[in-house]
Length: 112
Image (cartoon, rainbow, N blue to C red; front, top):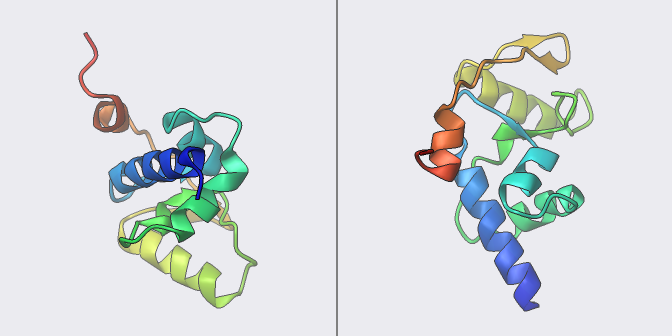
């Protein structure tokens, strides 16, 4: 694997691992937070290469829907895990939840 992929993967894993329970981020948001704003399509691949379990189910499409086909086993599993953490749905869409600045503090540290 290239140095780029190693760095990208490590940063994606760090961001995804930092998403608090009950919160979600879009693939593009993860890519931007990792410092690679144009690489949202690579986030899923990076997550699949993680040697440690990640809270993969907290990463969703930019329109706040799940990326899996509705009715599939993966869709049901992701929805169930999110609901267990208190994430609410209206139909197929996740209800926007105020994140405040907690996620920013986790990802970026205190802002002076």
